[in-house]
Length: 121
Image (cartoon, rainbow, N blue to C red; front, side):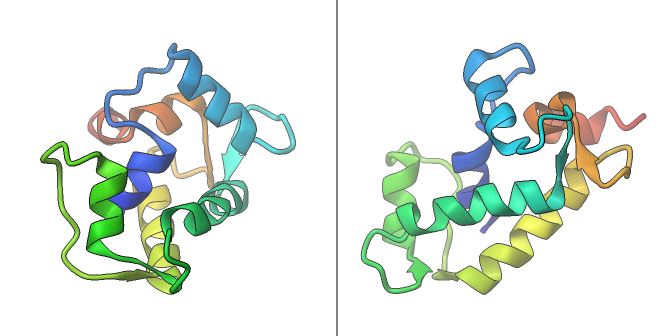
């Protein structure tokens, strides 16, 4: 389930100096303070959900997920993901990458994902 989220919000190969990653971060940082709170993160991600749910059934199916991944052989989701499950995954992912536990993501945490978890301060 998290792979759906990650594909859309933060590419796994993203670096903090990547222009697309910075643009996504800045778009999510609604108040422009250089930090993305959970609410800002969630709002951005929930705006994406309808684009992932291409058949408008309120779920991201395995086939919709595969289309998002581009058939690249990456992690596959087994079951459909509802918006409620998506919300749970968002919270879990946010808490995991918020390595300094300040309740907001800076650009390093946003762009790092797995790397940020490995480099806990």
